[in-house]
Length: 166
Image 1 (cartoon, rainbow, N blue to C red):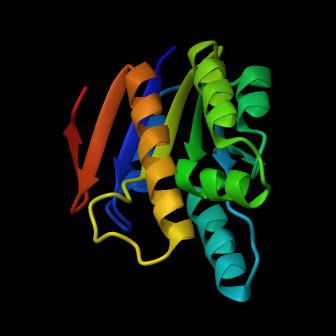
Image 2 (image 1 turned 180 degrees about the vertical axis):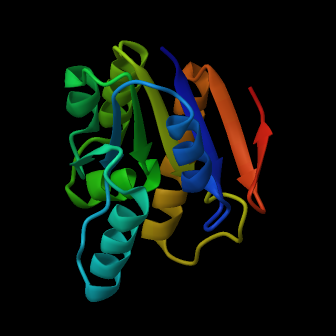
């Protein structure tokens, strides 16, 4: 059992690296997807990702209740992809981001199997011009720090290459 955090920028190879880690172990495996299809592009993206994953994983689509899903899981290993989409879902639902992050951290630490979290690093760019985007960037930074603190392993992805940080 372990908590693994994989972060990086868009198209840095985070999800591919997480899937490679998951495919390298035997046992029951799940993929927890947090995306919601609000438009045609996202609908097509979700369908493409389902096809790429194939049938070797049980797929759970859950945009909000990650702590509950992890706490109830009997899988040996699962990927949660991704924390930043989950965070935006939590924010738009008007839920307490701090309380949700704490519940998620506790569920991950108590999980029956290994949990791999995929997240975006959104703090390396320019300061966003609007308050909502700045709030999201700040909350994502705090969420990523919290998850890194409880993680057994932390990786930063750049150019498709993993850098182990912890």
